[in-house]
Image (tube, rainbow, N blue to C red):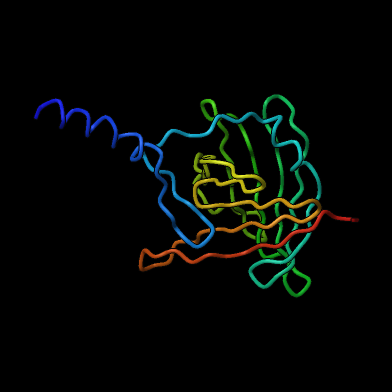
Length: 171
């Protein structure tokens, strides 16, 4: 009986180890015991470009430089009715053997949302073909088209999915 219980635990553990929690239709949450995908910054070089589109009912733009110093740095801005709504400083960097997508938010007057040392981090969970699953953020890359699905936490604790649709600028 003891062997049967031990074998049962051994064979059920990997299923638990690799499970993800679905937040919204297109986003996942990192399970605290889940093994993350190994991925390097150079494998994200496709992302280096200027991306324009729409999201949150406004015009949005992301700019990312190529990998350098094992990081990629970028900016985001949202424009509504011809005026800036907010900005973001973006960083993709190694996180263990994987990557994390980090964000620091700023109001239109460039005052920060987070405390000085704080930022929002989206660890990379897995990749399926052209879908890059970060914790709470999924990127779908199809040629010159890029879609971000973002899980936004509501006051009641549930998550709402926001879609940002981009196209490579000047394409």
